[in-house]
Structures are given as C-alpha cells and as structure tokens.
Length: 80
Image: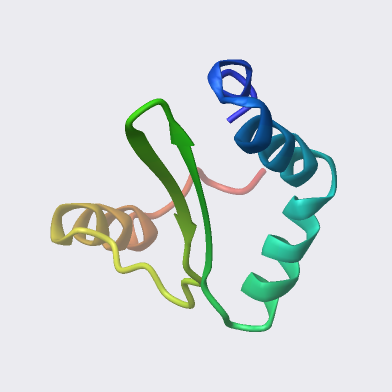
C-alpha cells in the first residue's frame, strides 16, 4: 500500500496513510482474536481491497508431505 498511497486522492490518501501509521495494529489484534480484517480504498475508478483471515492450519500439498515423511525416516549421519 505504501507504493500506491501516493496515487490516491486526498481523502483516500489520508485514510491509507493513517492505516499505515496505526491501523495495522487493529488488523493484528483482530487476527489474534480470530477475526478477519479488510481494508479497502479507491484509486481512480478502481476499488482495491486487502484482506487477511486467520489460519490455524495450512495443509501441505501431498508431494511436500510425502517428501517430509521420507526425509524424517532416513537415518542421519553416524554419531562421532
């Protein structure tokens, strides 16, 4: 958003700048309490939206999970 804020109009630019200065803390607190957070702005005729959702578990793709299990089952180097 720091890159785009200079292209916003006066009102949207002030809102975005305020979010960059202290609004991020609200997003962090909401995420920590399990809530989603959204911030939207307009750049000319385009609507922009930043969204964050809490994730408790992100599953690995099957190939990654199989690779991790294989590496964990392989013996390590001999102990000195």
